[in-house]
Image (cartoon, rainbow, N blue to C red; front, side, top):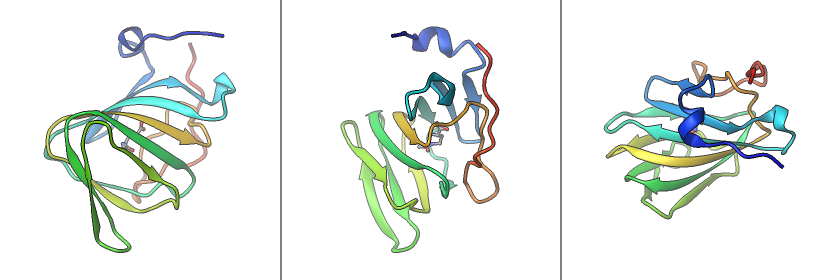
Length: 132
Ligand code: 9YT
């Protein structure tokens, strides 16, 4: 087994900066777990279009509040601490944190490390492994 600490990972190249969020990638593809696990901070008042065409994602809200709008049906999903939302159909969506939100994210297949969103809000399958 192995352990990692958020407090150490956030001062390393495991912390990836997006435009409206940052993400500390605690478990990645090269760990061989079959998923990746990230602690993501979503910045208050921003709106991000996300469409993970190549990945399924589960997002558990630890703190803060906001909403997700699934763009196919215009449905608004309220997100608050204790809520997990699951993008089980590669759902294209708009993410709107009302306050700063801290969320735990699980990706299947696992991210390799360096992926950031493309113009559609997707991750490609071509990230590079982070070196330790
Ligand atoms: C909730 C969400 O998908 N935010 C974007 C960042 C992503 N969670 C990541 O790369 O960790």
